[in-house]
Image 1 (cartoon, one colour):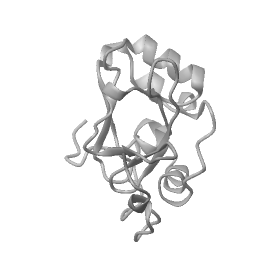
Image 2 (cartoon, one colour):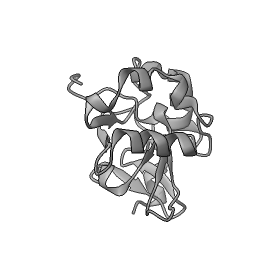
Image 3 (cartoon, helix red, strand yellow):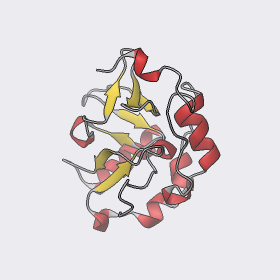
Length: 154
């Protein structure tokens, strides 16, 4: 569990850095910067992730996909894990946003605030935890996890 002070004002909104300039999957940088750093209640529109190149570039053959913080390049989620690619995509399509489960979270870098807001430990707004009958479900803005790793290698 995280605390509200993790989202206190920093040099770039709630983060110390702006989003990376070359986000993966052709995600829009200005939308990402607004969502990640300046408006904790704003989200990309439902289904936005399907308008990116994500589904064209990734597939079951990709195996587990690493999702990196769009600001820092820290690894936040690895999916699908404990389920099939088809199950990951189907659940994400049903809810309108990429949907991750507990076993897909990198807990060293991600926290959930008492109000359900999902954030990185560095202050990046990611989305929300919306539990359902299967447990915790993290509905995450693709623009928030479309970063490139710190070491530059995908």
